[in-house]
Image (cartoon, rainbow, N blue to C red; front, side):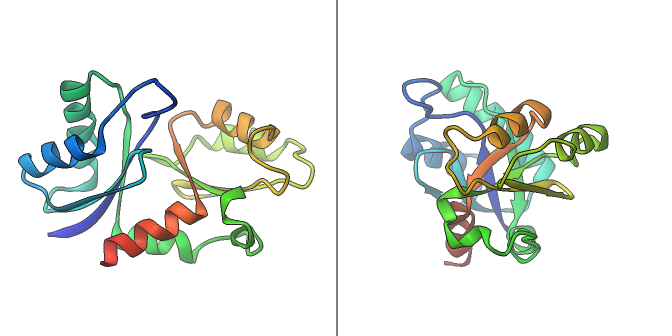
Length: 176
């Protein structure tokens, strides 16, 4: 059985799409997954499962919908895939301020035309690099007013973003 990381998109945003992490851990354990742990309230799950990532994506999204009534697209990476995401970081300065450096995880590789259109825009001192199923984005002046963050969400809709602190803590949790 493999250690896997599941990232739920769009939950616990203020008062919207509320999903209680203790209850989520219970239902995942009840579904046969082991060593289930969550990190913060934004839908970061580490678990051990024999299921393939694509199967887990569908299963977790369905469990969240059935239990909480929340549509939460889910992206899953194995522990080794997450290690590769960290090792491939194409923006070496990004982790210097980890809250302003994000990785957006997609279930599949984003559309090449959408990536080209994104890359063709001027984002000032912000940077974005798309590698495989991840987009790395550096927002040195903050994320709240970031043109890149808005455009990334519009152009490549199916992903879920995590800051570098969360990405590295998820790997630590997977290794615990």
